[in-house]
Each structure stands twice: as C-alpha cells, then as structure tokens.
Length: 567
Image: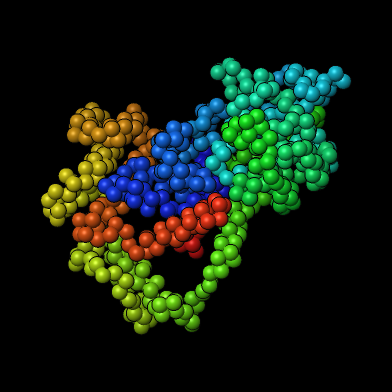
C-alpha cells in the first residue's frame, strides 16, 4: 500500500468552508461526518480551486456524486496496488501510481515492480504513416500511466531516469494526453474489454502530430504544445543518465519542465490547449501522463508515491510552496496592505492602538482555555508573569469557572480510552447531554465498542452490541457508518483492517472536538474561539479576493496550515 504523494498534501486550500457550512445550516453539529470531511478534503486540495461550488450548487449532480465519493475516503488515504483506476470514472480522485497494462508484439520489457521499461529494435516500415492505427508497425512504443490525474489536483509532476540509450538526443518523449469524453477519431482510443485496463493505444503518436498530446522530445529537444495551433518550443535534448521531469500547474496555466533537478522552462497555456478539443474544455476529463520510447531505450519512472518511489530529483514540494508565497506577495502588492513585523524589542500597534503583542497573547490564552488545554494555559500564564506581560480582555463572554478543567478531563479520558467515565461525567454535569447530542452519543458508543473488541470481547458479543446500536440509531447517516465499521469484525487481526485507524483513533479525535464544541454551546459560548474566528475570517477574505480578482489562485493559501502550524 502506498500513500498519497507528499507534495500533493502541500496544495492546501483554505478552510473557510467551516464558516460556509455553519451559515448555511444553523442546526448542523460541527462533528457530523460530512461537515468534518468536507473541511479536511478542502484543506488537502481534493476539492480543487473553488471548493465552495460543492456547497452552493446543491443541484449539480456530478459535483454531488464526486463529493459523496470523496466523503467515503479515509483522509489518510492510501493507494491500493491491487485495484485498477478507472479511466471512465468522474467520481474517483485519480492519481497514477504504475504503468497501464499494455499489449503489443513489439520487442520490449516492462517491470511493474521496478517501474522500468526497456526496448530493443522496433520496426518502422515506410508505409507506417499517421494516424498509424496498427500498434505492431509503429517504430515506437507508447506507454500511458494507469490513471488520469484528477483535474482537481492543481499541480502534478513525475520524473524519469534514462538508464541506457543515446548519450544525447535519445528517441524518447514524455508528456500528457488529454482524456476526452467525445472524440471524432476516438475509435482506437478506448478498449471495450472491461477485463483489462489497456484502454489507450500503445501506438499513439507523441512526436508532434496528435493535438491531444503535449510532449518533450529528447531527440529534437523540442516541446510541442497546441495553443491552439501547433507550437514547437526549443528547450534542450537529453540522454543517458539524465533525470528529466514534467508537470503542470493549473493555477498558473502552464506546463513546467525539469532536468537533473533544475527547473528549466515553464510553458503555457493549458487552457488554450484544452479549448482545442471537440466541444472545448467541457469535453476534457483529465490528463494522463504518458511516455513514448523508440528503439534501444531503458528508463525508470518515478511516480512520486510515498513509501515506494525515491524522492524526486526536483524539489517539487518547494515548488508548490513558492507558488503560495508568490500568491501572497501578489495579494499584498495589489491591495497595498501595510505589512508589520513583531520583533523581540519592538512593539507595533494597530490602528486602534491596541498592543499587538498583548492582543496575540490574549488570542492564544483564550484559544487554550476554549480547547481545555489547562496545563499549557497555566504554563503560558506563568511565563507571561515572569516576562511582566499582560493580556487584554477580548471577549465580553466569560467562560464559566471549571469549564476548562472539565474539557481537560474529557480530553484525557478519551485519550486513555475511559469512555464509560466520559459518559458518566457528562451526564452528571448535563442531564440531557446525550439526548441533545445524539450523534456524539452514537460516536461514543461506536468507539467504545471498538475498544472493547481490541481488548478481548468475543466477536459474537461485538456483533450483538453493534446490532443494538443499529436499533437505537435509525438515521441513514448512522446506519451507513455502522455498515462501514462492521468490516473490522471480519478481520482476525484488527490492525490489518485499512480503516481501523480512522474508525478508532480518528473517532477519538472527532469526539474530543465535538464534545468541546457542544460544551461551548451548552454554556452559551460561541462555537469557536476568537483565534479560530480570526483564521476563518482571513480565509473568508481570501475568498473575497478570489471573487474581486476573478482568479482562484489565492485559494492555494491556507492560513492555518501555512502560517500557524508550520511556522
């Protein structure tokens, strides 16, 4: 099993969705499966450049199908080596991780474990002219990857190392193929045999004659793109021992090329190339990474899959981050914000003459109190006292005495798997807590049952208990979740269940979060701390900038992930 590439996780989208969903439905509990997973999916970039469309266009069937499919994913999703991605599916979040299965009588060897392809002498009869529908008379071998890249992945990249072949000017092309819904010359493009994933013709011409292809040719050194007419850009040749890479950046509307770890060229426009299609951009499903080898080539592909492939020679993670920083600079320059820096010795005041250090301290203190981080709160207060720093009052709503300690108790009990004690404590403090918050009650029972199972409860008793829970919670959401959780009981070793971590540890974290929010509501406090609201307001402002500029690029910026967690 292989995890999603790290650089994709850096393509964070902002988390203004929390505020959006809460405004759209005042009665929704923050811990519903849909609410939390939409937030996390958007944060990881799975909802693309404009995640709000999945909330506002409720009648958009395709969007809802895609979203519903994603909501069933584990957020720490792994790629299943035993499952072929479906080229025809709109709903799958497709990421290639191996070669497609191909059939040809040409003289070649593919190693699906080592991700290598080597060719010997490939016939090239003189009558073999475009469109060359006969695979066996091509003179080259075209090998697609096993999946389209989801069009909602905004920056994608792969590399290959040339193990053997000509030192410079090797007959090798790497690039992308547009996967189109309708194509007037499409008869040879898809195989109707559902028992094979060999859906793309191994003889597709990548050498400048097919307007579905953009590609970098090692023999000529040219990169061919259509914008909308054919355009050959002179780049450089490559050969034996070179590591070359190609990627696309939908935010900047360009394709970028690398050689031996260096970015050597950025070329656009992808949009113009997409428009050069039957019925235009709406006809494009996505891009398929694809390579084409002539005779006597030997290459190794790096798909960039964590846990399996080597690190890229090119620093793609830094490339993604630099895109974000550039977007931040564009926003600052265009809106002429006054940047400020808070140094060790200098205090900078805002327009209301509020000491920014005091204000920041107060935001953090209130956040710690809201979250029940009592020990950290006391430690920070002690440090501030030693530094002679005072905080300010930023809220007129005073949190009841003892509430922070109660939240701390809940957090520690759940982390120590003391679920019955949690139930007793909450029922003692709030008589009707589990009647008011049925979904918290449901999740607490589920995670408690899983814990009892892994600590020795007989499987028959587990099944009996899950049936009792099913009788108590008839809501569709609960029934669907019970069906998913029940898969654990089919494993002799629960650790081998790929969803175990999500069902157990993931549920524990969600329970802590949901109970804290519910306690705030019970005490007539806002759901979120002022620091939470500040972050969400910043994200909301980014969304406004997107509308004002008509440019969705700023959605790459995530205040929480980019400027708080990792600074």
